[in-house]
Image 1 (cartoon, rainbow, N blue to C red):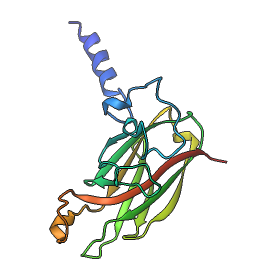
Image 2 (cartoon, helix red, strand yellow):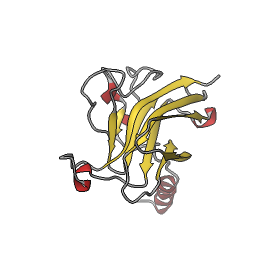
Image 3 (cartoon, helix red, strand yellow):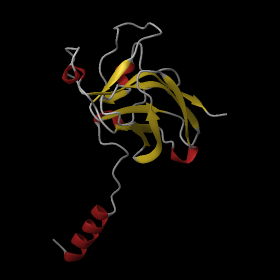
Image 4 (cartoon, one colour):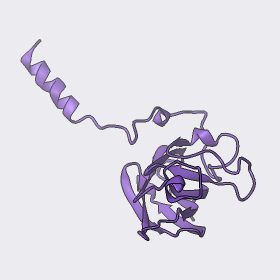
Length: 177
């Protein structure tokens, strides 16, 4: 093969930019609607939850339904209007930590740190984060990273051996005013 052609091909490979997320669900899907409501509960929730979430508890669409994060990272994928600011609303609580270490949840938008939240154990709190319009794409990866995850079984009093970090009651998106 021509040496000049090899150099050009190598240069193209070096400057290739990877997509925001390499999960199969990150491929654009025309049938996925723009996300505005609570994506944790109801039909179609699995279309948004990529990884790191347990099943809906207590297995209903009741107002008190929730999902635990499982492991030290969770990811969702949402389709939003490109170059438009949104508000991400979260209702969450942390799992109690016997070591009294703060649960810090880092929130990433398309691989870029958006915010760090100190999550309160045993009490739901509401948080609102602004997704800046210059960072919003059509298909957006939102990653939550947690300081720690604990198995309730290892702390006694439960048979649940999942590694849990944060309990999510709401994840919703609205266009920012």
